[in-house]
Length: 431
Image (cartoon, rainbow, N blue to C red; front, side, top):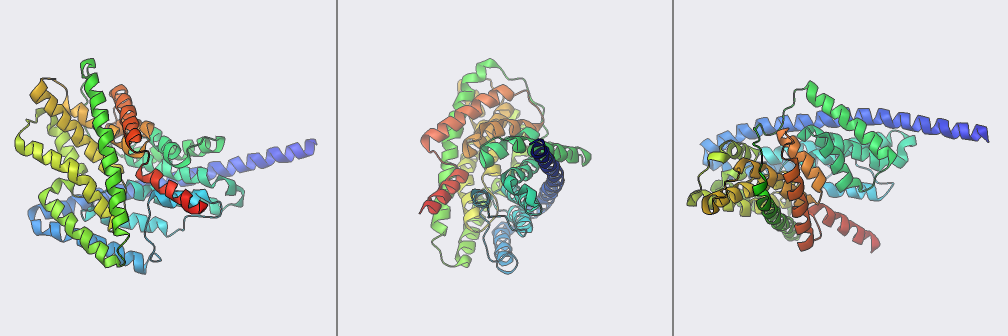
């Protein structure tokens, strides 16, 4: 009996030893992938956007170029299979025998890059998540002893990728838990903690900086009711974003020819970018500009119309980008829309109600609220938002606003883009 116990203990020791090694490898590879994609996207997006700003006709050319390249790559290089985003992870984790094929790494990396730099109105976050998840899936396939821990190793890749993108280890672990796993285990805690630790070390060594460089001003309790109002508005807008994405994807799925999807998407995206160039790519350039000028912004009719247009049309352009074959998700659009909702609410309150609130704070809190409502992951949104500015002084108002936003969105519509895909997959399996 003692011999059997000894053998079992030895087996468990070996298994956890391999899990630790796997988590280190996954954290290293996933963080390098995320940082490479982020830096490449930032560089080329800025370069092409500057060209388009000087020559407006390029706004009518770039989206077609990007979506056409992606379509050709998919047909000739990536087994003629469209990327499905987070749904691909769910399809893999729902069945033990399923796995993410290795070509998903270059597929999401390249397609995510080309989508954003050529003006596709989304971000690289979901591309990074699926590519990083693939690293975890492949690692599990290479070692039979880890077969039962596919989900945990996929989560390790996801957590490391999110950590590298937003310089927030808590956001990485919480996203893997709230969106992908939804359950805790010793193995999950072990591998995600190790992978995000490796990822944050890589970020420090490579001198990664927060996405937004701002100086936060101290928030005041008198603004608390307005934070709740911001959460309610963000929750309603998140439902609008979700339903818009699902609507356009369903409509474009009825087109038999892929060329029809590409041309229609490119035409409407180009028109949208010509009218509102702030919607180009992930839109972080517009967020940075408005963060810098937020506290001195004076509300005028043109500014009001512009911000309203941004809030209304960003979900439409995001949906067209995804429906037309672009790679991405609702991560960056949620952050973008939330920032402008917060800015608009703050300047309206200051202009018409003499509320004397701080627009910069409202922009940052709005980002978290909208993200929380869009993916129904409030704690991910809280720590990710703090990671965006590398400042936790707004933690409490962000916490309250994120919880309110998530509650409102879920009461209006119970699904996110991610959970709708998972629910649809489960229904298909039952049939």
